[in-house]
Length: 375
Image 1 (cartoon, rainbow, N blue to C red):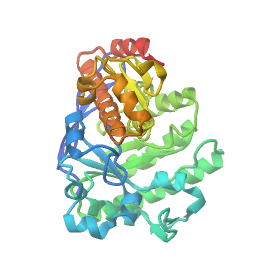
Image 2: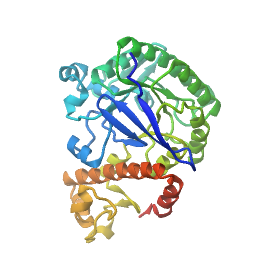
Image 3: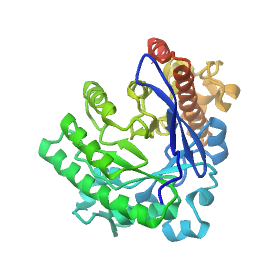
């Protein structure tokens, strides 16, 4: 049976834009949108404990079907009953089906109508994933929101390549939906809109997916090398075609500027490795822009990383100390940096939600971008 209703409720619309606030109801808790979802590919958000994620304000995190299938494997997760119990995270989890790995591991991938064969990046063993198998793995994981298996051509790509990827994604989506419903899952399943930079193919994709019917719809195949103009053009044309009563998820786009652009047009959900990956590399997001903590100017700086931030890192440590940890390659460096970056992103989304509810999203957007610079 499909998830209990209502799965998604729109709570507020900004009068000056397409931005909106909503609520997603899952078995593991409510999610207030627009929301950013920290990425925990292998069952962990790197450098953070579940308690630290909760303190940072995380409402939902991501896992990845391909990586979890390889390690620890569905047999291990099944012993614990769900990924939540295995990793000690009490909240909702969304899992990507492995479609991005088809793109990123393309030299070790064979595509066919039946599914995709991967050569494991761990030991070289062949792993077959069909749309139905992706559903079964995500059912074992206990995903509150699971994604259908999809594929995309990347950028740059010919129209013919994008059309082939779209046709295969639509074919897989129908099979995945049928198997999901037959499995009796009480969770949710999202279809993924592909079509490259071709507006008509994107329109065809959403038509195919809405005909099948899903609890939500994701936008895939962006933030993979296209220009900012192309990114905005595709979103501007696509969002009005997407069902207004279902959540809209922009996959893999994560700069603050991209988030504001997408929220303005009506996107509800975001994920990206940017906050955690950049934290490990010493690039930190603040209300005044990005800070590269290794820079010499921070060597004796006694001030907090971001005076406008109330996270554990900013309450307790100076820029000088954070630089010292990074330069000394101490384990504490990625921990404190990730606490801050994830907290910054989640607080940023909270400010967006407040601005939408207040009818002031445009003003917030303009104000944020006017002083968001960096070193």
